[in-house]
Image (tube, rainbow, N blue to C red; front, side):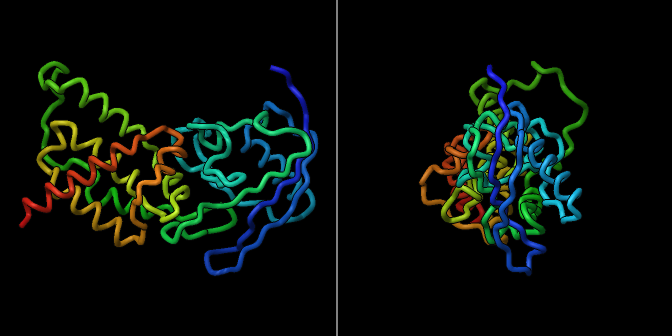
Length: 253
């Protein structure tokens, strides 16, 4: 793959805190390698700003390996940028070309208030998990793998649902700011496995109630969540969530 350098114009959202009025600011970066990651390019920009005695841009990151979900940025109108099933930290500058203008924003959702610049508060997801996304029954010592048979289809679907990293791209992509794909994945992950069965009904009722309390919107089946999910989580999990919720509601009456 050919390596090249580029000069770019960056239009980046700057906002001091959740109560401040934000705006876009324009920056120029030069000689950016096509082999840099997007976050490495941001590091270069921040070093440039610090050298100019200016406030560096706040952005969230941790693992830089596509598994923590923290590097959430809205890039040129797409969560995590132009590459499919890709996190921002895995996006490389070869996705752009010399002279491009790149617009970078934080997630836009009432449930994800801006903390500063590109950093948003995603603790609403944590509270949803705390409401029921766990197993508290005493399962005893670990059993041999073949002592607790699980149908392969169920195991595969649970594994695929568990791939959700909670980044919030589904919420950012949804016109309603819905968290149904996230909640559906977390409910499915446990509902499909024997260990999750004892709390199956209370789990879905509590998690959906917390989701609504946090102010997320409703799902209207536009499939934008699945299209922009960096881990390719299927909307089939939303259907499973609805079925689990209806079943639990009927049994609680």
